[in-house]
Length: 68
Length: 422
Ligand code: HEM
Ligand code: SF4
Picture 1 (cartoon, each protein chain N blue to C red):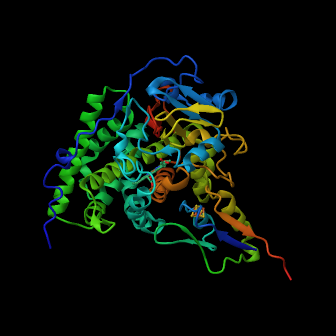
Picture 2 (tube, each protein chain N blue to C red; picture 1 turned 120 degrees about the vertical axis):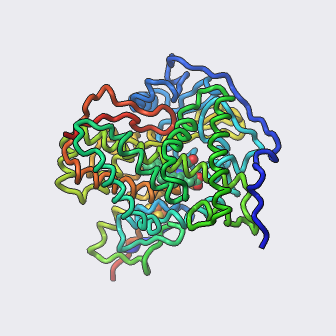
Picture 3 (cartoon, each protein chain N blue to C red; picture 1 turned 135 degrees about the vertical axis):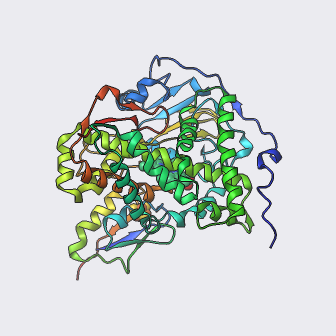
């Protein structure tokens, strides 16, 4: 599973980096940034879903990867 | 280096006289909220939620002939659509009243960036963002906490205190005065400016103009002092800032300072007050937060959802048929983030306050390009204010529920909040 932020929608509310600081951070203007490649470790999946469902701009997507 | 002489003359003297459009002031009881609404009547101030909930079912885009004509959408999806549609809804005016500023003010507006439309808005906003990131405002947390403690110290020995007047209002005043580099002892003047700007909306135009002149006189005084003695604060930052290769227009510097002063104070004051009001009347929630302080950030989001302090406004740009109604150019749209936050189509148990609500896509800080620049600052202040209060005053209740008074107008929070703490 991977998280992505759509920069066209993100307005820097910061709910993602408040709620899932292991997955998201802020840039110098407060816009959300995915940390690293956005891959969500299994123990952070719940956190990721909470961030997604609290973003007021619906800017975050979860990409479910097919596991091999 | 040339001397900065932009502020030697009063910039208002050199501006061309631009007249806006006043409309007839209509006050008095509302006959039907669907066709005659007014956000300036006492019934709305006391409790707007039943009105908004009723309209959402009965007439989801209500109308009024007051204020020269305006609309009130109450469904989340309609409110979001207005907030996102900066092509058809202008921010040239964001306080719905009996005065529409001149069209020539767009796209900058009197108080950028909140009064600005694209494309100007983006750059005016960008100037402010770095000073208001979560990381930047975290640097003010310690001083804010110490200040909250000093406020509680001053309540020592009292049985009944006014939590709005003696606690909530002082916190954002102090924080914003520090950030702007204004004298902290000017707090009482700030309060007057805020009340004039946001609550004096139905006063005659001359009186509103006089109030606005007082605010800008004060700001010009502060700006001149900063030009003479530059320091590390937002005022000096804005005086030195450049946009498109030039220093800002003097009216831009003063307008943004006015915005920060007004938007920074009574919004957060309202949010702190409404949260304390809820906890004072809901012992189970209060006890749970005292026992589980780690729940506070989640609870704060729920207070922001349920008691969203800020309602904005827009002006319709062109005559149009919009989602079933016929809007006219220059009609107001009252943009009720509080109504969006209580739409049952968007939130489960929308009318209940659930302090551990995990999924909470509320819009108390707006949506789209005007998302509150101060949201990280406001969240920090709100969390620290409530942490300190709950730690120092874990037991409190409403001393007299009927004595609680709520602000009239587009920023709603308790202005009188007597709590029994002894
Ligand atoms: C709980 C407290 C607060 C609430 C609920 C709140 C709410 C809002 C809302 C809803 C907007 C959007 C306006 C629109 O769509 O037209 C806004 C904009 C703004 N707020 Fe706040 N606000 C709060 C505190 C603050 C603070 C502390 C500051 C800064 C000192 C601040 C500065 C601003 C500014 C500069 C804008 C304009 C942003 C733009 O137009 O790009 N606010 N606020
Ligand atoms: S919560 Fe959404 S809008 Fe806010 S910073 Fe994260 S992605 Fe951006």
